Image (spheres, each protein chain N blue to C red):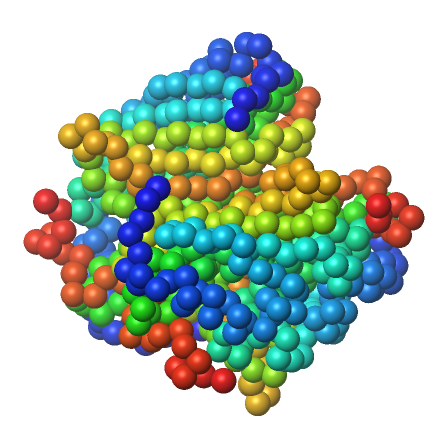
Length: 154
Length: 154
Length: 154
Length: 154
């Protein structure tokens, strides 16, 4: 699918928004790729992110799915809009056993109010990628409410 | 709903499992209540858990929903079983604006193989609780695979 | 939960909309109860609604969940709005083995644009009700687009 | 994705199961294609399948998504197993305005117990296909319970 971004400066807008999310820094996540209707986020393994068997915790997998989907949709929003996760559904299909998580989200259906995305999360072990979760997600644009520091946080 | 736990020692089993999840310690989460078919998890606010507007990040909200649902189901499992999140769907219905998150998950339908739970996440601001997310979740029991350190692969 | 309807004539609005859905007549469904934020739909068993084991087909169960949720949300909409199902997630938890299906949907969170509902479907066998499906659903109001025959494109 | 069916006679097994679902005949649905891990179901428009604006009812769209996903998973099951829909999540993304619905479901992750599918439903208007719904679905195999008339009904 090929989409036309409404905000030509969408890359900077998204990087700025992402780096104001302290939780992303806390877990060590980085945006590793993006394009119109697409966003990829990575997080390397560290023990603090693990569940009881030492793998990536499902909460980290869900966080990456949610965030990659949100920013994939945000690439297509006009500059004066912010974005809200309405809901998502996530299937966990393999354990998060590896040295890196990569979430890749693709917009399936953009819309003025609602946008539908499909985030997928891969775990990389010894360089081999395995699909560990797949999601289906709905996001809502808030027009006239830019996602900027002045408008947003307190 | 009232359920009969198959493992009379379920509380210790769950506490042990929970405290081996390093991600729970990292975000500052604690089990605040549990019973047969029920689990409650809390996490106090800290800046490291925030999204771009300073509220609790959706990933933290999803993490608590997922984990409270998993442990609610786990209360009803026999001692030789471990538990796996198959999938969940989460609706975010209010911003995570407050000093504390509380996730409460209730088993709706227990089963030998599959168990269905309904996790809800509340945000507490100045002592007032607001529902900020509701979920519907499917879990699978793995019989003959105890959730213990010896069994759990490192 | 107690809600204030914006359209005092919501019962007639919903009955009119429901009876213009030819599929409801085709499967034999009737609205059996409604109130602000609530809708109940029933369908008696007939062989034409069955799956391969003679039970109510999952498609009929899903249809009732979807429709009861849609009309539960519609009870709270203003008279000049129509309603759209954005998405739903349905867990099938018992076979549809019985003489009657009853879907009951409750609004969890109303909103100007989006409304969240929880539909549940019960199957009645020899007078005993069993929960056979539970859902979580998102609906969107279309303001300025009444759900009337004149407006509704043929 | 390419899958190896465990039952070489899967096509006949599925046709037999499908044609015992009276609801499929009632709405006029037919299997139009299948292969290992894949199933396609079509239903032509008739007024009895419509919602209040004359389009295909969402319940019919959901029914096709559910059934195509179920049979896609069933193509990969051994001959002594039957299949159960655990749950699905469906996003409705365009009105069902057209002369034909086509559901196409693909297995994403097969498993001995659980299988994950992605059903998509297209509406065809004047020969042009539009994606009108996308789903994500979990199915469970019941081993040792063949889906045959002797075993199944009542």
